[in-house]
Length: 243
Ligand code: CA
Image (cartoon, rainbow, N blue to C red; front, top):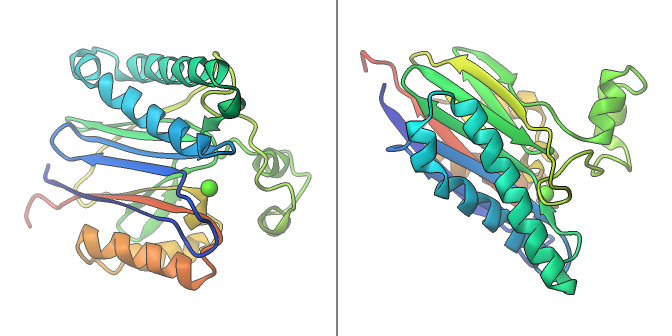
């Protein structure tokens, strides 16, 4: 296993502040994207607090027999901390954040996720979204009420069914997958996935540049497509062992 990674965030072209927080550490195998919400810069505080809380749990995570349970507890802990700050400062009331975590340990990949940021995996030529979107339109799509095209253009597409910090209890999406040589992972906020469809994301990931160039190319493509929101990306590559 040889990991390389690049975390990048950009304010985009329309917003004045950046509420996305990103984190990548190849030594611990921990990668995070969080997209905060709430007025008066509270979104920035929420996403930043979420990333910090997960990072603080790293020693426990590394010692854990069951990383999934540990990640779930870290999410609950992040949610509680954000709620405490929101309760203490009226201006931050209602702040919350999406939180997508990828943790690579040995030959396993652990995902923990809440919200509508995304975790993708490119394996050989196939791009797959490993996370599910906790959004109203995604739920309507799962129930067959609306089509994927209607979901993309819906006025309701920014409505989240879950976020970290809104309630103490969070129903964390958890997934464990085997790690393979050549796997490429992308964690991103909706500032990327709203601007680029899966096909466009896939074609950039398949260009086999360095993780730095790939991350930069994704951000630039989202801006070229309008850059309506903050863009947060983390690109993680597990190089082929024969490389
Ligand atoms: Ca966003």
